[in-house]
Image: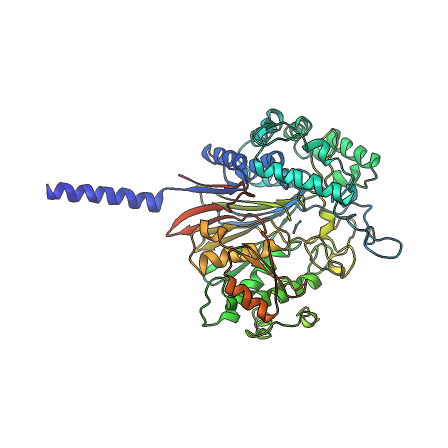
Length: 553
Ligand code: GLY
């Protein structure tokens, strides 16, 4: 009997440990239930992480109009078959764009011109991006990956209260600013918990399904877009569309502690910023132990942030137009020197933090791991919530307002408070600087974390803090995405933006040091992490969020 029991326990143990070690698991962390369901279906039917990402991107263009898009762009960090890759499907400035296009005759920035309305859009990159991703890595048919989005646009989807509330906020804010766009015409009829259909968008998606990239950049869709531009004072034409090209780039790959961080290169500022932040954190911390979100922790990271953003404003832009000194900005000696400038007692004077080298609000993110251990970290955007507020009539999709991510004038902040100079000035066909930071961490050559977030410049803080929360503070995925985060970016002077929930005593001490504290939320992190050898997946929770994360057995 004893022996029987023992062999029973042994069988059970072997079975559990087999499951723990060998059962291939997949996971997704998605910004809404529709993209979660569709990506789960693709993975369950034998699709890989890139297939799931393509299907999710098109679904989000229907169900998450605040940021999901075919009228915008994004970045995809890929780990597939043991190789790293990076797809840049960022928008570009139209050929007729020029450096001073948002300035009045006195050389002052015309309020809102780069942010709302038809002139605020770059040439969209998403459809070409998905097409290139599919050509290189897709295993399912293009049509099958488009089908769920077409069905949701044609037959409708149920409107989440958070979407309705964002639509109301956007319409009110356009009205209060006197901005004339056609956003309300397309979205005011959406009602909470009711079905919302987008027939024009369904037809555009069908053309993309039938003709691939040419279903958007050539033929009927391109004609509709360029005619709409002509009729409404826009500058994107058929030539801009036909010549758009997304680009395969080498991701930044760098070791941090015993992890390999795979992250976004320029024209994102995010990868460089995250690695500068993590590296300087270790240098400043040394042998000390920091409590999570303590005074010392927040002050150290804010001080590092001043230096990260001083470099960002000076050196970063589109690498096809300027020389970005990536290696120098990530050089260990350089970062050691920068870290030595930091005092744990006092705040550096913002005006004196110079670049160091010598010579959404909205966006959305999803993270995927498939059962083969491939990963996709994808951040996609039309920039601010609902982009330019302009819907291409007859094609049914929202145009981005990504031109605001350029520096309209040196020293004048964009909507995220980010400053820039000549490195990020407008030029035809140039990509605007981004903070999008889709990131994958490997440990022992296995995917350990997939992380990313929306939130303009706060993306960078959300992503590096998700890494510190998981690795430095051993948090579960759920805690890592929901624990309060904070952000400092040199300008506005000594302002730390933070979530509710940081201890009052810490906030008072920071205020005593000279910081101004501003409470707000940044964006919903979508994290897959590894805890005790198993994936955990989490989306930030709360009334304003509708993310869904799943571990798929
Ligand atoms: N549009 C936000 C970003 O790319 O950083």
